[in-house]
Length: 92
Image (cartoon, rainbow, N blue to C red; front, side, top):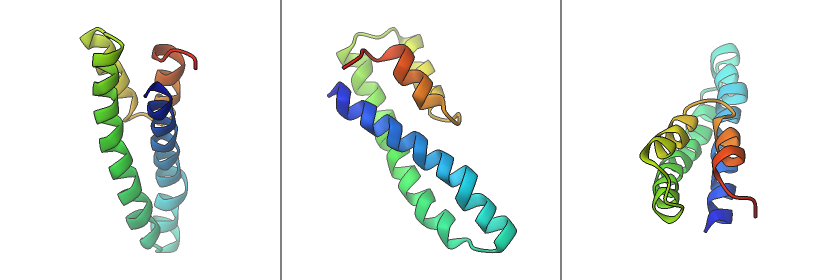
């Protein structure tokens, strides 16, 4: 299950970076909002799954609540899930 959460974490982080770095500029600089709709929806679903997965890891790995909150807060920062993966998840 840890490996599945790591994969989910990477997908969530990449979707956020694509949303911020590609889809948003296309929307505002080239008037192409359809990419924000598609990537935004994918990112939203991955974000919710990430939060659920983080809670599962909180229970499975016996994290402190503060660790859980840091992992959750990492999900709203660009590159945050990569940091959380390296710092709080055991190596596979």
